[in-house]
Image 1 (cartoon, rainbow, N blue to C red):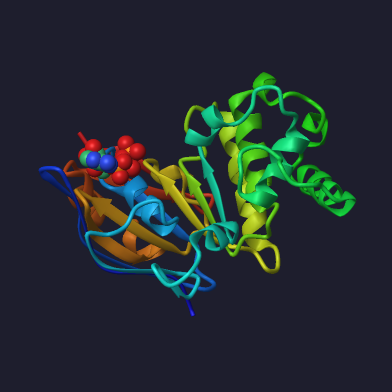
Image 2: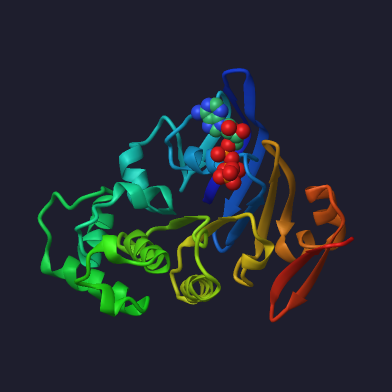
Length: 259
Ligand SMILES: Nc1ncnc2c1ncn2[C@@H]1O[C@H](COP(=O)(O)OP(=O)(O)OP(=O)(O)O)[C@@H](O)[C@H]1O
């Protein structure tokens, strides 16, 4: 079973074709980084994987289910979703524990009865992710980095098979970014780790655990494959349309524009 299969996807909006014949297959055991500039179509692809939008033509299947043949609400419970757009929708006065518990229902608040086992699980996840001190604190008082870590904890509450991280390091200072990245790297190493999709504009955020990379440009797949083969100066210079030089240090990639 493929985790995600997008075949010949076209998505038309008003005068514009946003996705232009996208093909993308994610297999179990792969962790993907999705790299692209602003407006290239990354979020649109994620919204399609989550069933929030439907392709104009082509087919999408996620976790072995073709869209249109399965209850999307059930499917969404198997997908963890971390996105800054969630920040605005969560409740300022909820503490970290309630936020993480809401992940069980893939809902914003907690409307169902909570079992003691759920609460223990939420606390364990928060502790594992180094957020012990936040458990009883209000979400509205968290720093951006703390918010991101709690959102990742929330996404793990349902033991998702697929975890989508949409620009999780946006707005973080260097240290908060490295903390979040370390957390993701640790997550990828655990047994039964979910398949990860990590969306970013920044090459240096591509962790060694992301063994696959997809370059998206202007609604099309520019290149895809093993990260080690995709991330080279030649391919990225063509991708960004400026000469760039890429260097590997400490198993991460660092990019500079060549004058
Ligand atoms: N509902 C819509 N109607 C019309 N155009 C849309 C719609 N949604 C997205 N677009 C357009 O499609 C293009 C791709 O948008 P998308 O949000 O997927 O890009 P992105 O790669 O995620 O960008 P960013 O990195 O800035 O978040 C943009 O030009 C955007 O304006």
